[in-house]
Image (cartoon, rainbow, N blue to C red; front, side):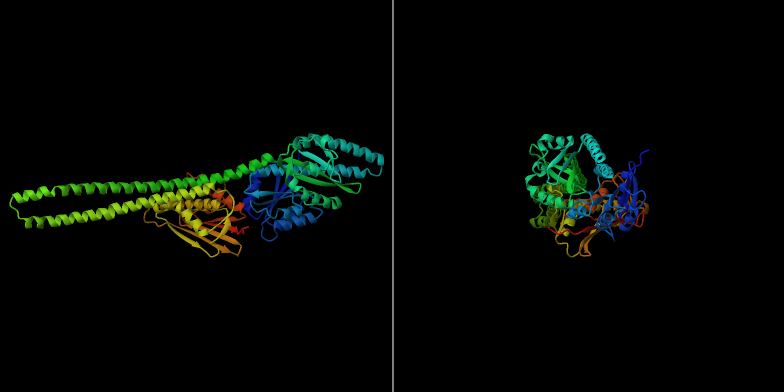
Length: 561
């Protein structure tokens, strides 16, 4: 029975460990470590892990230091290391790859992409191991030149047969950068036949013009040392096809020393479809957040429209009352003539008429001030409120995931505006507390707004569930944001609603899980994904049922530029 490859998961967050464990348990043996020290111990286990999924941001020893120590130790330097980091936090990618990691996987973790990456790197490791074993076997037979040459010929034949079966491109270049081997996979991917490229300079063939200076500079260093930024790891690059089209590739390079000179064997894979899938997934997550927020927006627009309808009915009632008053006034002349004919004096008629006219005047004043003016003002404000909600939603839907500078207080105000009618309907008060230093932050505003709308909506629903329609209950939501430790933004959304059972606190951010009977389980999951993509942390705190809930979020601050 074939032994499953072993994967070591290193992360200080149990949520991430559990997520990866559930993803990998079918096809791989898994180990886990919660910090850098335990990770290094686990790497020395017997059998050693074949691959390590290593979180970068950990307390104490971070992922970079763990990787450095593993690659400095002969017993562990062969283990493939993939960094797991947040989307948008790969600016130190060169540092990580320079330490010996082969790849980066970004949070939020996509199971199909992650499994594909792991499979690819394990396969490439096996291929490198096979190549290394072939070389070792050849070296053992070096004492007998004939046997060595025979083994070399046999290995080369085997290598050619194996490489022609591979779907990936396998290319070998000599110390001068000239192509010496070009398999069928390379023909399919780059479009050149073997006869067209053998003896040609590699960089002239597959490297776009704008990258050639850097590529040649890196190869000059490799010629002397056999080392470089892309050696013994996997990198993503842009390559050039014969027809002039550029496309993304995943490239792994292994150095081979032949007759005292360094040669290189590269394995390249066309990742165009994978890149498209990643982009579709990122866009789908963004649109799902817009849709979730849109449901709340439509609900609040509906409330505003109902308020306008009620005020319009008030105007109609006032119109009827004014018509009745006008009818009464139109009869005064006939009443006066009738009284005069009966001999009533003018003074007596005026004495009777003045109080009645005063009452009519008061009625008309009330209609003007209370009925017409008040209702018209409420209708105007209702229309303006709808327009404001629509404008915010339009700006959010048109904005991409790019960062921008904005004020945090304005962001919270927009989130409240989009749900104001629902909050007023349930009698929920809002307490906003924004500390110094947040007048201008550099973050993806649309996703931040989606996050706050989801959190406020959840808090409102928790309060409504707890009150059960009791109008005497006073719901309250507190939203606070401060700068902590100079480099972090801490956000708290707190409510006095139905709370969360303690045993469920670790489940609420999982996709599909909801404490509400009709909940989709997407809202808090999307919030958690966004927070992780920004290298942040999220935590739910509740003392149990009917004890309210606090959602605590912490983001590292990003400087503009």
